[in-house]
Length: 186
Image (cartoon, rainbow, N blue to C red):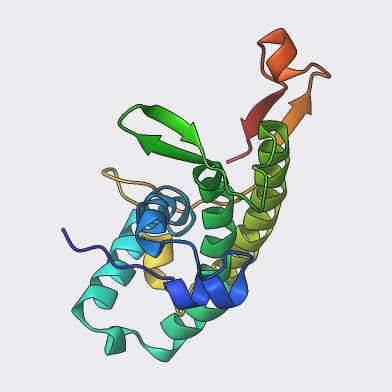
């Protein structure tokens, strides 16, 4: 099944900390997941599927307002969500013998607690960009009428994009219990 990707390998390399030695085919599934879960929740299923269909039909299928939406808001939001979701993938590799920690001669893999801190940082940035995207759409509903369309068979557009955590001041690895409880404010 063809999937329309709103961000490319070149975009990620030019605009994020992901460098050119990362195998893009390993990121593709993360990009698809981020679009399906996060972007669809922000845009709502109706608008998300409409934009994907236009992108698959022809890259020139977007009108100028949609191009602005994609370049100024959607791509930036996706980039941070992709960074958040791909961070553990950069540390681990799935092999036939099990899950392995990636390693090299010239570097040392980050500690898992550092990975979670990075993911939290990227999540905060992603949610901030998602909120900018939501505000832009809310303020420009005349340009994007599908943003207001409701559906019973998918997701309706989010009105807010922030989640918050409660710090329980425990160590997830020493206690075997979660350090944060994530509460979605949608």
